[in-house]
Image (cartoon, rainbow, N blue to C red; front, top):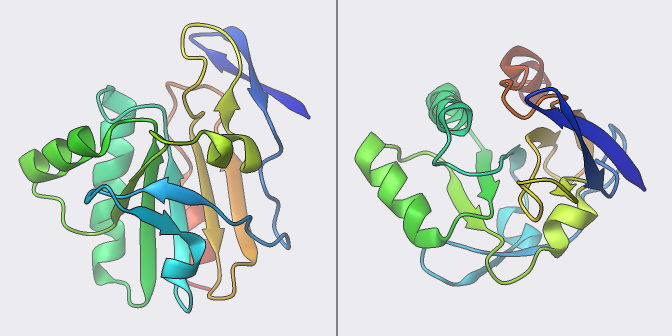
Length: 168
């Protein structure tokens, strides 16, 4: 299935279907900061918030990473998963420079299947192969409580709705 978002107003296709509330999260394997594979099972028993974005090296992505990092600081039993196609080295450099300690950065460097399975793979245009901006919130069992595919890549996600779903 193909969805559309925009990049500076220009239509861009996104492959896959973003999980909807009530869906179960798909299994995944992404690369963590230590270059080890990380899977959904690594976050069993925790509420999960996926902040999915094209690259930490863009202003809107950097803002969302910092905002979610700050917001989850006061919450218990939360796994903040910051997912992009950036290399783990770039994730680590950014988080160290910004003093960010909450959350887990995850890279699609070995496999883009996550982006397709989660409905965020940009299919064409200058950002093809990267993730569209999206937020998914799931409960401890991996059931989706909230999801948002941000319609314009340069726009920030709806933090309030995502955080409200996380606190239910």
